[in-house]
Length: 124
Image (tube, rainbow, N blue to C red; front, side):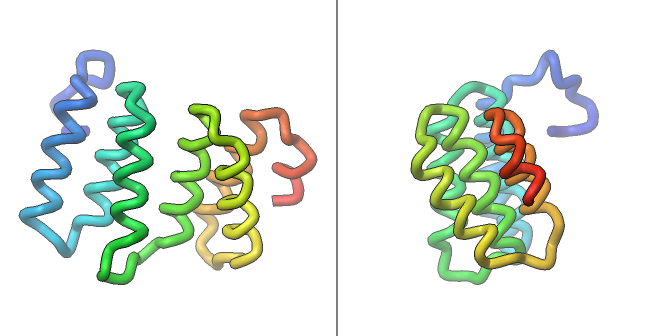
């Protein structure tokens, strides 16, 4: 979100669209911009569109800087709109890959904790 836009007044769908356009103009920053766009779509309640952005990132020909973060965010998003089995499978994959970056671990643990999977969150 732009610093001059208060969160409570934001049109998250419009901001996501702006970020997607910007990602097209700056491919070197596309990963970060599309992750922000997906977050705005989640805030707007359009979780399927956010999942589509995560899938777009994961299927991109260019290697991702933080693929496990994208996977963890996708899993968290999927779980929020009822795709628990798919989310769990992605979480298991992230855990098995054991990324060195702490961010995916935090997202996975928070997703598990949010759904009362406290033991699994603690193990993460």
